[in-house]
Length: 391
Image (tube, rainbow, N blue to C red; front, side, top):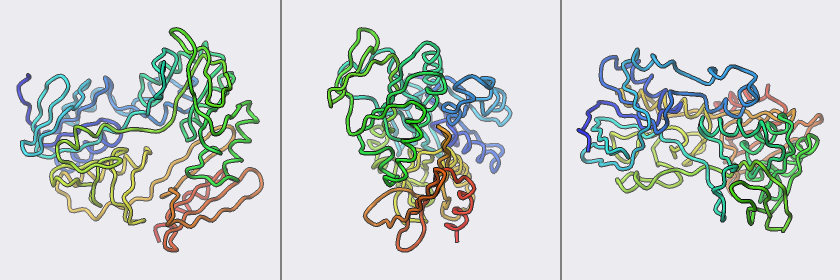
């Protein structure tokens, strides 16, 4: 076992939340030691760019993906450790053990490990041409496969499935979409709004199969065909799965940190251990707008949480974390915009507006207060609604 390293600030996870946290800490504390650790081999890069046409279809230089230069870390006096996966945490000893048996003792800890795509849980789901999109390496593999593949099958009903179907169509592939839902994005969208998206997809040649799943996979080393639970057989030489995220919580909960869908945090992004914070996709935090415990999986939220958590770790007096998250997604000639909490539930009142020219508005209210909104083809409305929700 390696000799124990010591650091003032230990950040596990070097995505946008972790990197922004390190940057935030350094702006308040110019001298104390910061250690930023990632399980990946790369410096910080844009995950958002991975599913955008310019990058995916290689219309822009590959180097646009990097968020920080290789020398930025040393310039900021940040120790940057790659290819290190945390496997255990001892809160009493302030000690983290990594898979390679590295030990790091910390004074303050940020858990910003993000998540990984959920895997298909069916036989033969380990074949070579089954892909998931979260990391740069996964994006590279899909981009390479797209150059020769002709028939793509996409599984899922959310924004990854939406954007990847669009990209595969732009690449000249035939695309089949498999969703177990009655309509696309039905966890958020009302049926009328969903039909606008589905019609745009169909207009670009996508075949959609509702309320069904993959039952079995046919092929030797690679997928050649899939069979659905409705017994439909679909030829396939590229299978992309986007069915949600899962989080590595076992080693965290075993340390006594409260977890649920993610790491439970208060309105200051602090866990039940006073010197441990969390940020990004894995953070299940107390939201001041809704009064609920929420977990967001988008870039802007992760960046803002990282900045906030870093300030707290550096000892800055901070008000409760309050931020109206928003993000957009584009494909098939549509622009989708989301703001605030767009989660359905028994305590939500949903009001919709269906307008001409493929425009749709959907508003989410709790206790007569606007807490979320989504739009189709109305990007100018997003900023207006965020201001309204802040009132």
